[in-house]
Each structure stands twice: as structure tokens, then as C-alpha cells.
Image 1 (spheres, helix red, strand yellow):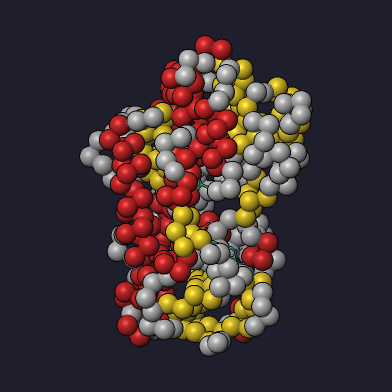
Image 2 (tube, protein in one colour):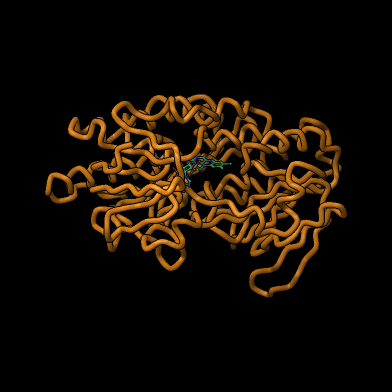
Length: 397
Ligand SMILES: Cc1cc2nc3c(=O)[nH]c(=O)nc-3n(C[C@H](O)[C@H](O)[C@H](O)COP(=O)(O)OP(=O)(O)OC[C@H]3O[C@@H](n4cnc5c(N)ncnc54)[C@H](O)[C@@H]3O)c2cc1C
């Protein structure tokens, strides 16, 4: 096996594949010189899991084999990175080998800590405890919603960064809509227990979502952090993040968004900031201490919402800046913190939030995107997956 590459990319998820495709499109010289290290056999289009949990898509459609997505000219090393030695431009992989690079791109995603909430991991997928954040269990969300006969339906948002900040509430709106259709809404209380201080942190969309919550008569309780599930008794235990009071909420079904954190092998590395995320410059995406290292996607410490949509804007910045650096030119590209969250508010309804680092809306449509629209729902369901597989991962959009 070749042990030295011009560019090594850690992670073959949304970010890693997009950057590899762009680098290879932009520089012929990189053919055979880009290595993607990822142990996973499968790659997932995770945004679809919201619709899978809501019974509106099949989970198999979110999955492709990793091998089929590796761009031509890139080499896939099917292994996990275990440690970094950025001073030596080297890293080690689980097999024990050391690889060296001229340039490194870190794109290993976020780590879900299923054990941070007591009682979650052992009960997930049974006893009406469900989560869209697991490919393995996402079908169980729909099974739970579909067979729900009334009572309290509880949805949670943890006290940590999450991938797609809107996803914890999207599934709640779909479930509420389904309860209307299945005639159980009258005997159902829907509760949102969220660690956040408000329903959304961009004012324009917050105001619109507050109206959705009111219309749907959802009992939204903020600064509430789920700390334990007593699955046999069907009780969820929350801690109030300001008063530290403990509150027990009995439920009949619970959808949990688990605690998330920077991956362990990043947290413990020289690349991490004090919170464990890869420490990059927010505009250039270049590492703040190692000039030949870049990071993007969920594992980067960018102060914006962690989404695939954000990566669509980050990938061209990393590719252009890295190639410029390679050619000893000034880095031309900057990232403005763009992220987007297609907030499904029911079957056939969606608010398309798009915003930047300043939490200001940056809308791409010629209409007010805070209005719930069927056209935007169709875009999320039918158009965005095509754009992802055939555009973003090919480095063309
Ligand atoms: C339920 C849900 C709904 C979502 N909805 C949306 C949405 O509507 N819109 C949107 O834009 N985004 C959405 N997202 C978020 C989006 O899926 C993520 O932000 C995006 O996938 C992050 O891409 P990434 O490349 O950083 O990480 P990932 O795509 O998760 O890929 C990380 C890769 O790194 C690999 N890896 C991990 N550890 C190692 C290691 N040690 N060595 C080598 N490789 C490693 C993994 O195997 C994986 O392949 C949603 C996510 C979920 C779960």
C-alpha cells in the first residue's frame, strides 16, 4: 500500500466525498494523489431520515455503498484514523500503519453519544422509545407514530450541538400531522422538551415556528435537558438548565435526539480546540495552527448550524483554498457561515430556513421562505436527494 499522498481526507461522508470530487475536478495533477480514509462500507444521505421516521420515505433510499461514491482518481483506504501527528504531517490508522500527507482535510462528522442519557441505549427501538438519529432504528420511529393510540407524545432536543438543528422538531410536526390523520389528535398531548432557549435561533424563522407551535397546540418547554428515560415506567426525566430542578414527564411515546460531541479521536488530538472540535478559521476553513490542514462539516468548530447544506458551501471553499495553497497563491475563497434547514412542518409543508454566521436570513428563492409551502416540501423530498447524489457528491454543485 502507498503510504504517502498529496492530500489525505479523513471521512467519506457528505463533506469528505464533496471535497475529494472538487479537488479532482480542479486539478489533474491530483489523480491518484487523494486518499479518502473511512472504515464505513455505507454512506448515508441522513436528511432523508426525517421523512423515513415520518413514514414518507424508505430508509434504503438514504444508503449507497461507499465504494460507488469514491470519485475517480481518489484512493479509498477502508480503515479508521486513530491519531494525528500534524507536526510530522502524519496520521495513524487502526491497522497500525502510518500515512503521511502534504495536505490534510478532516471531515469525520459528529459522534453520537447514546450513553449520555441514562436508559436510552438499552431501550432504543423498544417500548415506544425511538430516534431518527439511528439508521438501524429509524423505521421504529414510524412504527411508533403509526401505531400510536393517544396519550402523551414527547419529543426532545439535547444540550449539545446536533446535526441539523431543526431535525428534532421536524419529526414532531410530522407526527402531529399524522395524529390528526389517524384521528388520535384529540386524545394526544404533544410536548417538546428542548435544551434550547427558543424554538429556533434565527429570529425570522423563530417567529414563524412559534406560530406553527401555537397552531398545533404543542406544549413547548425550553431549557429542559433530558437526562434519563425510565422506559418501564414510561417516564422521562429532565433537568432545567437554569434552575437545575428535576422534572419528570410521563409519556406514551418518546422521540429522542441524542447527545452529540466531537469524535473521540479528534477531541484528544492536537487538531482540537478546547471543546474538542477541529480548530479552523471560520472564513477560510484552514486550521488555525497547521497551515496545511483544513476541516469542514460536522467536526469543524464553525459557529453555524451543522448541516449538509452548510457543507455544500464549505466544500468549494476548502477545495479552492487548498489548491491555491498548493500553487503558492493567496487563498481566494471565504465561507460566510451559510447553513440551511428545511423545516418540515407537516406532510406537504415546509419552511426553508437559510442563514449565515450573523443569523441573518440569506434566502435563495424569490419569495418569503418563512411561509410554509408545499413547493418547498416537494423540493426537500424529491429534488434535494437528486442534487445531493448527482451534484454535490460529484463536485458540481
Ligand atoms: C435525522 C437527520 C436529519 C438531517 N436533516 C438534514 C437536512 O434536512 N438538511 C441538511 O443539510 N442536513 C441534515 N442533516 C445533517 C447532515 O446529514 C450532516 O450535517 C452531514 O451528513 C455531515 O456531513 P459530514 O461529512 O460532516 O459527516 P458524515 O456525513 O456523518 O460523515 C462522516 C464520515 O466520517 C467517517 N469517520 C468517522 N470516524 C472516522 C475515523 N476515525 N476515521 C475515518 N473516518 C471516520 C464516518 O464513517 C462517516 O462516513 C440531518 C442529519 C440527521 C441525522
